[in-house]
Image (cartoon, rainbow, N blue to C red; front, side, top):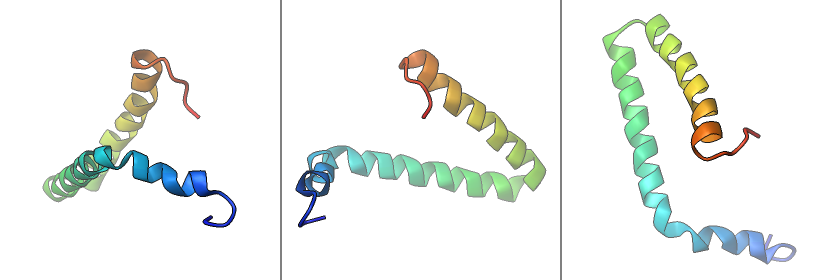
Length: 69
Protein backbone atom coordinates (compact mmCIF):
# COMPACT_ATOMS: atom_id res chain seq x y z
CA UNK A 1 0.00 0.00 0.00
CA UNK A 2 2.89 2.31 0.67
CA UNK A 3 4.05 1.99 -2.92
CA UNK A 4 0.69 2.03 -4.73
CA UNK A 5 -2.03 3.71 -2.65
CA UNK A 6 -0.77 6.20 -0.08
CA UNK A 7 -4.17 7.90 0.29
CA UNK A 8 -5.76 4.69 1.55
CA UNK A 9 -2.87 4.11 3.92
CA UNK A 10 -3.16 7.59 5.45
CA UNK A 11 -6.99 7.74 5.62
CA UNK A 12 -7.34 6.00 9.03
CA UNK A 13 -4.91 8.47 10.58
CA UNK A 14 -7.27 11.36 9.80
CA UNK A 15 -10.19 9.79 11.71
CA UNK A 16 -8.30 8.42 14.71
CA UNK A 17 -10.01 10.70 17.30
CA UNK A 18 -13.31 8.84 16.87
CA UNK A 19 -11.70 5.39 17.05
CA UNK A 20 -11.40 5.08 20.87
CA UNK A 21 -15.09 5.84 21.33
CA UNK A 22 -16.13 3.31 18.71
CA UNK A 23 -13.79 0.72 20.19
CA UNK A 24 -15.12 1.30 23.69
CA UNK A 25 -18.73 0.98 22.56
CA UNK A 26 -17.92 -2.23 20.67
CA UNK A 27 -16.24 -3.73 23.72
CA UNK A 28 -19.14 -2.57 25.89
CA UNK A 29 -21.65 -4.25 23.57
CA UNK A 30 -19.63 -7.48 23.52
CA UNK A 31 -19.52 -7.49 27.31
CA UNK A 32 -23.31 -7.30 27.46
CA UNK A 33 -23.61 -10.18 24.99
CA UNK A 34 -21.45 -12.33 27.26
CA UNK A 35 -23.51 -11.30 30.28
CA UNK A 36 -26.75 -12.02 28.43
CA UNK A 37 -25.57 -15.44 27.31
CA UNK A 38 -24.56 -16.32 30.86
CA UNK A 39 -27.89 -15.24 32.35
CA UNK A 40 -30.31 -16.92 29.95
CA UNK A 41 -30.43 -19.69 27.39
CA UNK A 42 -28.68 -19.32 24.08
CA UNK A 43 -32.03 -19.50 22.25
CA UNK A 44 -33.24 -16.32 23.94
CA UNK A 45 -29.99 -14.51 23.18
CA UNK A 46 -30.05 -15.61 19.54
CA UNK A 47 -33.64 -14.40 19.19
CA UNK A 48 -32.51 -11.02 20.45
CA UNK A 49 -29.67 -11.10 17.92
CA UNK A 50 -32.15 -11.61 15.09
CA UNK A 51 -34.17 -8.62 16.28
CA UNK A 52 -30.96 -6.60 16.48
CA UNK A 53 -30.27 -7.31 12.80
CA UNK A 54 -33.68 -5.89 11.89
CA UNK A 55 -33.00 -2.73 13.91
CA UNK A 56 -29.51 -2.42 12.44
CA UNK A 57 -31.04 -2.42 8.95
CA UNK A 58 -33.98 -0.08 9.59
CA UNK A 59 -32.44 2.62 11.78
CA UNK A 60 -29.84 3.84 9.26
CA UNK A 61 -32.41 3.71 6.47
CA UNK A 62 -34.97 5.86 8.29
CA UNK A 63 -32.81 8.00 10.55
CA UNK A 64 -29.86 8.74 8.26
CA UNK A 65 -31.51 8.06 4.87
CA UNK A 66 -28.72 5.62 3.96
CA UNK A 67 -29.43 2.37 2.13
CA UNK A 68 -27.86 -0.86 3.27
CA UNK A 69 -24.93 -2.02 1.19
